[in-house]
Length: 465
Ligand code: ADP
Image (tube, rainbow, N blue to C red):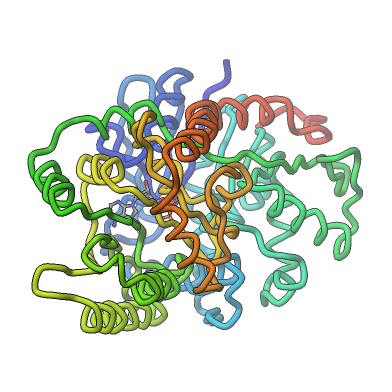
């Protein structure tokens, strides 16, 4: 079996196993099985770009942690990746902050990473590159003579062709993308968006459903919806945690139900709209006074980017005004926590909350939706209210699907979730649970790898480097 080489923006911590979430664990497990490399940025903000990376061998896995300078972090990571590509790929042209120095740093950092990685590659390695930070990496490696199979998975959405064409460097980005052998997306919508762009704007020729041929190279494009490690999240939800249990018991004694939202504090998550929908619910249903509360956990992220500071201020104002209007001495309708909460706490909180409220304006997948389902009690489950614009909505069709721009509709569906009869809750949940457990992180990884191993027609006429 070929070695696997994983490249992600930030290299995982393979020793302590503290990487959060099922994805990093699934990837780390696959690496241990096949042997290979995990390459990425070392996470420090005071390095020298291009300086020798830290190389550590852990069993049959080589961990390569590359340094970046503060300037490149500002320009490549916060700049091009998170102030150009992130808003653009989340359909937010209005928030794109394109600057030449961002672009210069992005392409140069990718070139540097490629050079550093190249020295470690073997001819029959299979390379799997993750996410929007690293779109140019395959093209840089190809320029250096690499003939290995290289796959790419985009964890975030891919925008419609018209919108993508507004990106200052769309041609360059797509030319770079076409150097991969397999391009994986979360949803069929994303797949269709790229296919449409390729057909309209490039000379790539489509063969069958999923293959495009460009300059004699074959590129596969397909959908691989990402999953979670459902079994271990479900188990975590049942582990007792004194503080969570006491809080949930208090809610029970008060006959109060809880709606929960958990996100990074990102403008793509639709948080202001969500707050307003909850405000509308309690306004329109006075009988719910003191009988429902909304717990929103939102951890700060990318705070150096203006758009993130703006959304934070907006949310603080909204939370204050909703509580100011409806709270009583013994009821805080909206509890807003502005920091990360440990997974061991989140899982039982999901289990003890009657509604999971997940309403991004646009999201690649949204793992919180799947975690909420995995955490529920099958015999008395809560209800997932899910945005139609989360990638997860393509699969989780038994959730209450809402338009996150429609505040009244969200308030109506929240109410429907709160009064839903047990039988309907069970029916919906059992269908959702089956999907979340079946299509988990491991099966996502196996599916992607199986297609990548078969990919790469037309590029193997010369011996691998
Ligand atoms: P994104 O990747 O855009 O942040 P996802 O929903 O796909 O969104 O994944 C988020 C992951 O991070 C989930 O595993 C979720 O449990 C975790 N997470 C999100 N917000 C928080 C938070 N405030 N505290 C702790 N974990 C969080």
